[in-house]
Length: 208
Image (cartoon, rainbow, N blue to C red; front, side, top):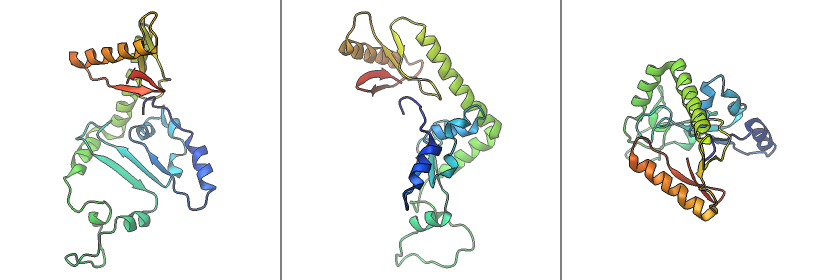
């Protein structure tokens, strides 16, 4: 989450497959969207070999919070896991059509799918690709611009859309640099032009 780095999925999946009965799930909250870009798809090479995947729509697509996707390679496994309880007030019969109750944990929920559908239809495949590539290009540009400034250190290799930054005044120790970094974050947030959050990475304060 802090660095945006990727595990070698194909190798990881191969190791998991050696253990009978192992289930491999990929939490691709924002990283899975790299698959939308020919320039970035190599980062998720081997992803299709997993058993299940999740990703968020409220990040890249900017739809309302808590919208996301869950995919399971074996539809039967998903249906059994989400099967509704056998309560007296529920009637069951042979399903001729897909019933959403059998595929998600909630019986009642808001229409999350509508905004996601609208975003996907509006952007299309090319629009999503451009959105992802532009965001990643801006992250690299931001890292390059910040790295050229005094007292600024870029802590990660920018491979996707995450930039991890630390601010260190001359002669400062780790404690002083932590306080200085947190003060920079506070001022950026108070100014209100954009939102950058704080984090801790390998025990030191950083801006993400």
